Length: 164
Image (cartoon, rainbow, N blue to C red; front, side, top):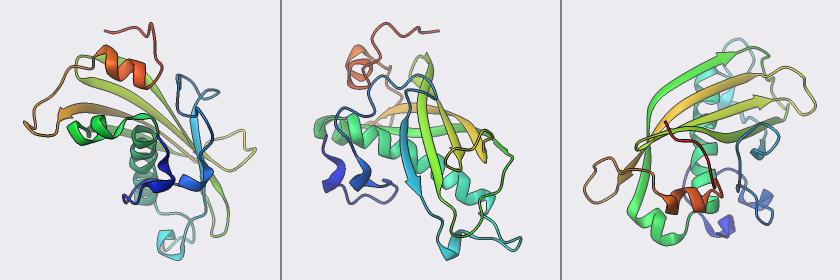
């Protein structure tokens, strides 16, 4: 999908899109990546990016990934909701610094996917924040969980991924 047309809040950097990105994202090395620079409202009293902003970026990169690979029909019929976030903070991002946000997919279990996110400064060996979120696929009309089928796996190019 061409995400340069997306005006949805939460989609990060459509101008950063490259051909075939977002497919086969199963590790840090194969992850979808976007760069952001925090704005003035993202900085807390300690003078660095607020922890809540990192969590917003975790959600935004997931939305970006889905809208990058899904067809318009899938976006119209399916929606992902977060069930649980686990997040760790290590190396604070300061005003004016760039953050690289990477996301990849993990374990599938029924209607749920584990999504991993790593946020760090370019070239850094240590993460600024990393998170694992359990996302659940929901049918937009019925608002009921929907088992992740081969169509979803094909959309993310995750052929042969193990289910639990």
